[in-house]
Image (cartoon, rainbow, N blue to C red; front, side, top):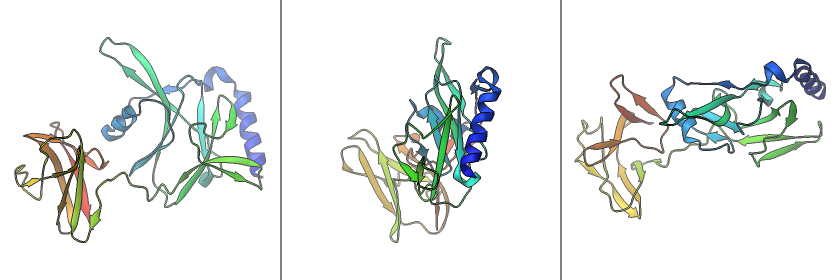
Amino acid sequence: MKKLIFFLIAITLFSIGFAGLYAAEQTNYQNFELDTLLHEIDKPQKPVITEDYIIFTSDPNHRYVGIAFDFENYNIVHPFKLLTHTDENGEVTRKHLFYCYTRQHNKTSLKYRLVIDGLWTTDPLNPLTEYDNTMNLYFSKVEDPNSVKLYTKTQKKEGVHFIYKGEEGQRINLAGTFTNWDPWIYELKETSPGLYELELPLPKGKYYYNYYIGLTPVLDNTNPQKIYSNDGRSASVIIVN
């Protein structure tokens, strides 16, 4: 039955033709966090996993790329969109095609296949595949997306372990709602060149914080949870359970 579904979808794609369907739609995300993540991807690569998203990318020179997931029985092909970059001279370049999956299912893995210019295939940028004997097909796979974290700080019994990565020889301070935003109370220790750490006991609750270099606030680039105010201020967010 699944083979038949694949065949019918493929036939449908070919019957519609390349002219209208295989034109990537340009996008301009209003979600600041997602827009930042997308522009941080310099070139097409294996799936990028964050706390809230799994971002699939593809070569921008393809006319059409779509993705179908196992939890939808591969019945729906979601089209990729085109991300562009405009330089200071107004020149527009194609960065990559992408599809952003918002994590909303309690799953330990996702299997998927791509449709690239009308042909079903595994993801050429993802080395993780799985062979299905019943269908005689390979599927691309994202392992354990619901538990993978990008955080480099961990919550321990003795407190929250904050980590900052940057240039060596700096003075890095930590401030937040737990210090009334006083940047001089806590200083991270450089434990190895460019790696700064601080263990801080915090009770249960939700906190906003930033690292500080002098009086300049710096977001925690290992933590995807951030807030942005209307006046342009930003802060990282942590929840201690």
